[in-house]
Image (tube, rainbow, N blue to C red; front, side, top):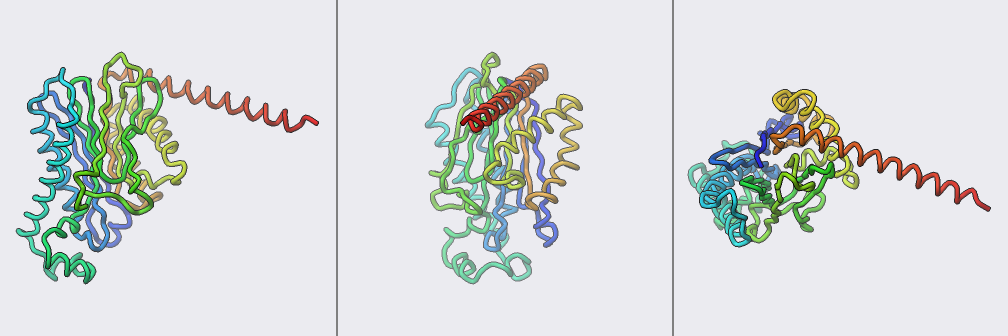
Length: 321
C-alpha cells in the first residue's frame, strides 16, 4: 500500500519563551518503494541539556537503519521478529555511538548556556563515566516503516501512534509501556533501552476493513493538549473531524501548510505549551479515505442513538414505583 506522507514539528511556548531550542524533531523518508516517518521528543530537563540534538540524531539514525533493514526485504516478504529486534537494537546502539561522538567533538563548556544549569550530580557523572553521556541527549522515538503490504511501527518512550482504519474505527496498536506515567518516560538514553522498544506490524491489504487509511504519530506535546483520562477520544476527534476532514475538503498540501502554520502552533500556545510533532501516512486512495470517514460518522451516529436509548431506558426505570 502506498501513502502520501508528511511530518511537522513546532516550537513549544515553554521553550521558546526561555530562549531554548525546540526539543522535538520529525521527518519523512522515501526510497525504493519504502516510506518512513518518525517523531522524536527530547526530554528538555536541565540534565538533558542536549536533548534537542538527541532527538535529531534519533531520527537520523532511525532512517539510516531503515535503509539497511529494508535493503534485503522484498515487497512480498514479511518482517521477521528477529529482524525487528535487531533493527531496534541497532537504532539504540548507533544512537548511543552518535551522541558520544558528538560529545567528544563538542565537549561542554561554561560558554554553553544550558551546561550552566546542569546539576552538580550530573556534571560529576558526565566527567567520571562515559556511560552517562547519553543522558544529556535523552529522547523518545516513534517511527513507522511501510513496505509492500505491511507497516512496522517501532516506539520507545511516550507519545502516540493512532491508526484510522478503513472501517472508520480508531486503534492504538502499539503495546503500552507501564513505565510511562505523568512526566516519566522510557528513553533511548536508558542503559537497557534496547529492551524497552515496543512494536507492532499492521496488515495493509487493501481489501481488509482493518487496514490503515491513515497512521498518525505524535509526541506527547499533542497528547497533553487534552485531559489525560479522555486523551484518546479527543485525539480521535481531532484527527477525524479536523485533520482528515481538511484533507478531504481542502487537499493534503493545504492541510499540511495549515498544520505547520496554524493548528499546531495554536495547540501548543493554548494547550500543552510544549513542542509538538505530528507525522502521518495517508492513503493515496482518497475515495478510500472518504469511505472511512463516512463509516466513522455512521459509527458515531450509532453510538449517539444507543446512548440516547440507554438514557431513556434508565429514566423510565427510575420513574417506576
